[in-house]
Image (cartoon, rainbow, N blue to C red):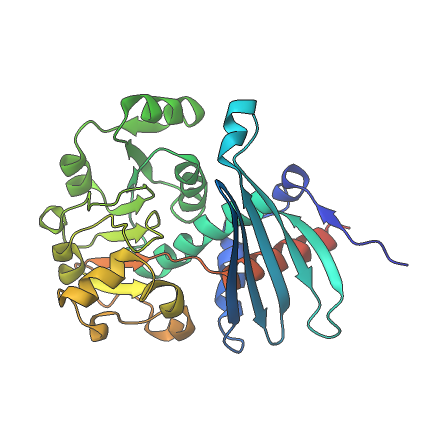
Length: 306
């Protein structure tokens, strides 16, 4: 009987490439549209979340996450889990992939695909809004496509920005968000904000914004004016429009209309900049289909490495 590979974080990450991943994500969106479904189970204060996706021609994945807030007091991670990847031809289990590996590469790769298509290719000034683990992933991803870029980070807490700078010494720290936004050419925002941090009045011609942080209906990182001034894209209509405050709220208030959202990744032909001075925004909603595409890419690289 053939053993099922268990793909760990460190050994697998050495095999991965950000540009190759975004190409794999683009290819995944040329296949039939994914079926996706989420389930939640609760035992206060703990949660089990399972996100499933099936893409005809690629297979199936179930990404399960356990959220145990009490773990921090014991020196353990609050979030754990794994990804089960299944064959499209016979439904057999093909691999178990590290949860954190899939999440890291899916999240930053999702935004990098947008930046490769929407940001000006000569962009050299990148601002990271938020200094958490996603900021480190974005730094790595953006560096692959914009190797001459200089990075700045802004965080609501100076200590978190300084901690990021220790990990990434080439990153400068910004004290004023407005000044940093006005100076940037690419902005990657990954915060837990429930009220907009980035104002549309600050945006400059030619900028591109990747919005990553908001994932609930009560969360937003930019205001209405930012959305109104920009050409707006999303990674997936299904995982953003009715679910995330960044898009859901301004649609409900009439600040923007559905026609204002130009395309998602299932229409890659429309997913491009039309002029050098326009402002572009892409809202990253994630989704189980992207976990499946990322997991399949990881397994392909794992197999290729023997």
